[in-house]
Length: 433
Image 1 (cartoon, rainbow, N blue to C red):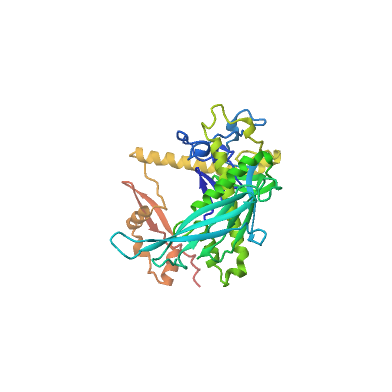
Image 2: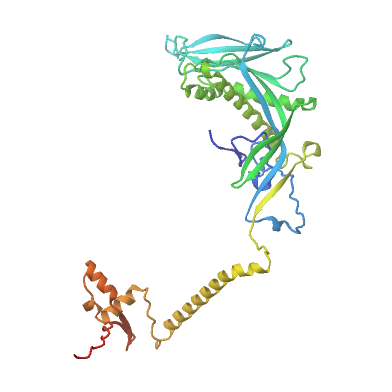
């Protein structure tokens, strides 16, 4: 799984972060104007309106707050879901049934079928007055037998309304069951309870949006009926369109957990498959909420700006890295005095060196100074003074004797220089006995 989720050019850590809308301009993602009719539920990417401002405090201008690097911690509204998946008991089965008929497909000019299509009819009694039906088509071989190891069928029914008429409409139920390659998943019921949250969101270096902590949450109220219907509708759309002729995207995600387990059978670790399924549907809810927020915050979604009853308050803190001076009292000057002197002397020496170099280049009568760090200068002066005749070999004794030789630099006419070996000092003669 990728560590960063990109949506509308905004970068989220792992998920869209509890159904968040970016509230910091530099983290908001795309700056391209949305296309015609590309806002609200038809949103297909584009710039969004950021209705948050940074309090300048005692500063007179926003430029004072730029700094070297900035990060933000904001407490803002989000949407996530409490998802609980478990094997369906007799009271939770919802009369979940899957019936099918087969249709052999015979190519033109042939008398034998090439393959078989299986038409499925999946139903569930969501409540006493509502039965939901969903149709699927899967593939099988010419004899009507699917490839059990390569074909997966995961029918899913999303009950968008009350499971019990006495329930407050604050949750919905998903019924599912795996067949063929996915038969490790028994008849399962997932109860999805969306939550409105107050979430701590960290806007960090690199433009990453991280929902680091959910501070508080509450279930939907009666005022959120349409929002709950929207979330259930997205879940139903995703469940319906995840199934193909031979596999299911949701089933493949679960199968990766199943096939990665060392223990066999998976029944010993069914709980892990359920946790994966819970995370999957929670991610669908969070992404759906982010999509809804971004679509209705897109530039042009409202001619007069976003209505006040569609906004929520937020607050946070900006952290800034900058550089400056600190006053530590009069004694503090002594701690920076040595560094200041070294810096000053280094600067003077560099300037003096540049001046002398300039004079040597532009004064033909000025002798070039001898640079002991310049290899060419050493070679020329050594050759001029015949220094090679006084040096021994590269053996250990020769190298030690060579180190004791003292040389003198002599200025010659015609801008020449030579290195002469100093003669050894004469020892004091002892008086004759």
